[in-house]
Image 1 (cartoon, rainbow, N blue to C red):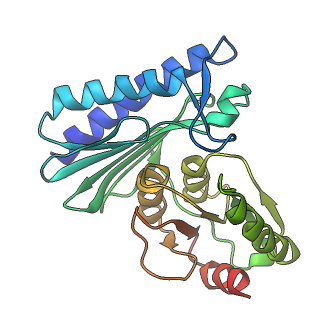
Image 2 (cartoon, rainbow, N blue to C red):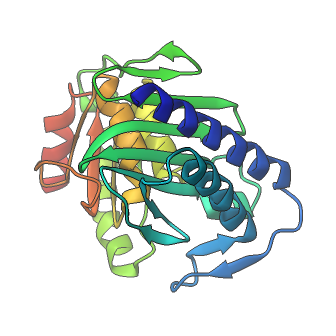
Length: 256
């Protein structure tokens, strides 16, 4: 079952991602979800339709939690879908966005797939089976000290959370080698998994932002917790993901 779920997840991510990439830079219909800076495009919706169609055809009894369509109850397995993570980037033709598909079994992460069509990079993970990039095994970096680390973050749509994160950012800039803010939590997590980033933190997240990427990090040998260093699940509103070696340093810096 795991292999078939992974296969369908990868096929759905590739199809939806390639569709999104084919539309980048063309006329895209943009609207807003609540906050003026929380965008949604017709490509988000079409991409999600592609994914849900493949999932429901292959696994009609499975549940679905999707960013644009909401929740469809099912038994045992739940697909957590972000059809276009990094929509603001996409709307500006900035090539850092992806499709993210996580699959939970009885509430626990089972499969994670993240596809970046701009770089044609497919990140995949199965619980207990390791993580890969385009079929090759990946692992987190071996950096041991925060002062030598490249760290990533993201900013929530909520203005109060943005201002709070500025304080965290200031402290991290003082201690780390550098901090990047690229605009896609799912890809940031995968970059931790393959060693491009050494750590990542963000606030104000939703399940579809982290369901796939958090599993990819853990299966690549990293550690994922909340910012309070407590157990992480996909319904947590904040996250810290690192190579494990600098985890306590990142946590203490954020708490300081």
